[in-house]
Image 1 (cartoon, rainbow, N blue to C red):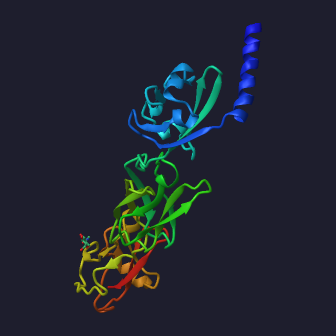
Image 2: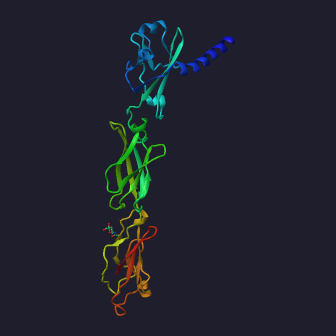
Image 3: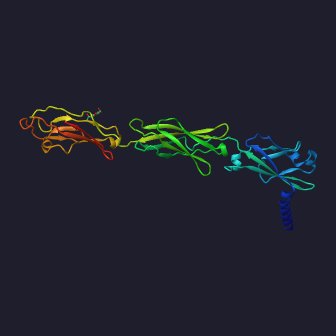
Length: 330
Ligand SMILES: *[C@@H]1O[C@H](CO)[C@@H](O)[C@H](O)[C@H]1NC(C)=O
């Protein structure tokens, strides 16, 4: 017990003492150096000769199982002992140092060596997925924004993601923002209105680029599906349909089939046919228009002597919300 306490006291003394008595030594090295790479001439910087180093039992004091640094006792040079990966050692922290204690005996001295590990642009930005899909209504207003996934680059400072680019296309641009922590995020901007009937999918490439001296980059595909909006009205194949029919045509006889097509998809493009509200009661007694097929059939008895020409308006209406319609004359 007494032994433990005195050792503790001794350490407290040491900790107080060394900051005052002995200066710190600082070195800076880039990460990822080869094993055996030069860090600093520690013997010279501590003012020890090679002989003194041996006599005074110079040693690195370390709690870590893996010793990242070692000393060549033959020349007093501090060396890299293990590959040092700044990202593993310090993660996203902007500064990264190894604190190495050095001890010599007779008299006992402790020195602190700080080895600053500088970031090297050894990582490329990457996205968590290779492809992202996005659905955009063709009715979306210009200027609308769509957030994009951020890329990750474990390097720090300028070596991490600094810009984003989108492949050249006529409709989508990119807006990049800087978050308060300095990281960059990108949003897709609709710069030109979409038209699903002209182009219904886009395959774009999003590129994240880091700010390292030799730029590194990573890509993701953005697949945009344009969702249909009801922006097309049905269009009749004729503005005016003309047809002759015998007065003795039996009930149910087909007079004519009208046809309108709608470029929209699904219900937005489903067309049904109706007589307009202006059509007279008498016409409605004589003719029937089937909403689904556009077939006009004889419904009553036609009499040439009563009237030999009928003219009436029909409309084609789609099933979108809201509906769109167009008119023609029979
Ligand atoms: C209507 O016109 C379209 C386009 O010409 C055609 O594909 C379709 O078959 C026509 N429908 C009828 C009922 O005639």
